[in-house]
Structures are given as structure tokens and as C-alpha cells.
Length: 296
Image (cartoon, rainbow, N blue to C red; front, side, top):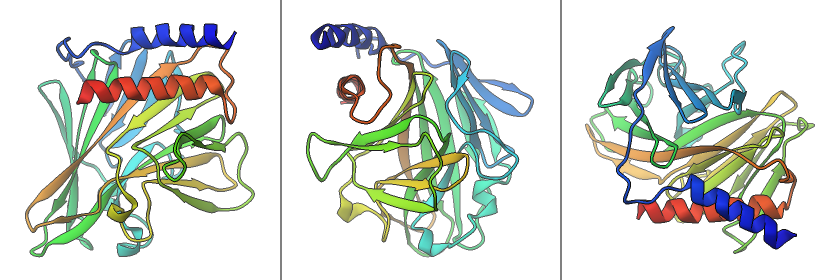
């Protein structure tokens, strides 16, 4: 039975992963009600430039994957500087919640922030969708507007509801996975730190999955007291799935770019959305391997 299920999953992957010989096809973004949207296949993706250029919705077949209750500031997917010890709390309002300049060029959404007065840093984000592999690419640029070289790492924070689970490779133990059941709130605030292999996945109880791919980094290249993957939980309605990039020096007047690719898919209904699911392991490993090959 399991071999038969693997065959079904393999056939699904063949449909989902397109050959590198097919030319990239970028989706035309739309602007409506002060939000930039990307609609393609069965996916809806939305960015709110007036609220820190935040990713404010990510749906497949009408089902929302993110936590989008905007009654507070803690919703959607945002972007920070790492390490947090440089700026403490709260995040820079210029980078996190204030309006970004925005526009569309060559079927790409571009967004630019103001400069944070404390760190003298600003952000730009370039976002586009590709029908060739049904992906959404986000290119984050960290821009140093100071007169001195500074060192930072990029940090993407995606908030999802307390349902389903998140999982990713355990870099400390090859061929094993970290599994975090988030079907109920944590009894206390907790932040956990992990080394992965350049990707993480979130599967919800509606059998939808978000896979995020980014550059795999060594622990020696992470920001001080930070890691490649960080999971923040508390006794509230969302969990933060956080991924970070290389801790790099940025010369005065220069910038560094970090790319994250989002893949949203519907999963077969027979998949078990639970810790150790062989279906989830097989699907995600094959999917990531195939996407890595197309990028090389």
C-alpha cells in the first residue's frame, strides 16, 4: 500500500515540477484597494505596501495558510534585521509597519522602505510569481545607508494559525526531521532554535502545504545568538515560523540580497498531517530535491 501511495505522490510531483527547459513565465501583478496581488493556478498572494510591505494573504483554492487577523501588528509575514540584540524590541516601525514606496515593473512588484534611524538600514523587496514552477519569489535587499560598514543577517517571519504542523530537516542528525505540532497554543512563551538544510514546511489541517526554500547556511555564518530556523510559540492564536540567512558585512552605501521561494500546494486527502508522516516526508523531500535541481 505504501509503495502504491509513493507512486501516486511521484506522479503528483511530476505534474508539479516543470522542466528547466520551459522558459519562465511571470504572472502580471494587479493593484486593487492599495494591495498588490498575484493570482495564478489556484493560488492567491497579496502584499500590503502601506503596512510594511507585509505579505498579507497566501491562499490556495481559497484556503488561507497564514494568520491574517490584523487587529494587532502581529500577523502575516514580515521581515526584520538579525540579530535582534542590535535593535531590541519593538522592531523598527519604518521597516516593519510604515508604508513602503511601491510599483510594478516587468511583472515584478518592487517595494522600498524608509531608513530606520537607529540602524541606518532600509529594505527593498522584489516579488514575482512564476507559472513555470508555480512559485513565488521574494528578493529581500538589506541596504546600508550609514557611513560605516555594518553586519546583519536577513530574517523572514511568517505567522500561521495554531493548527497543523511545521517540519524541516534536522541538520544535526542526517535523514531525520524536526516536527512541531502546533494544533494548540503553547502554555508559555517559548523560542526554539534549529539548524536546517535551507527549507521548512508548514502543513495545515485542510491538507495545504507551504514550503519555503532559501540558501542553506552553516551555524558559523548565523548572526550572534540566532539560528537558521527559529520557532516562536505562545498561548495565543498564531505561531511564528522564522528563517534567517547569512550574517554578512554590508559596506556603507551597499546592499546584500537574500532570496526566498514560496511554494504552495494542495496535498492528497489520504496524507496524515501528523508528526512522522511518511507521506509528508516523501513528498517534501522529493519536491525540494526536484526544485533544487531546477535552480542549479
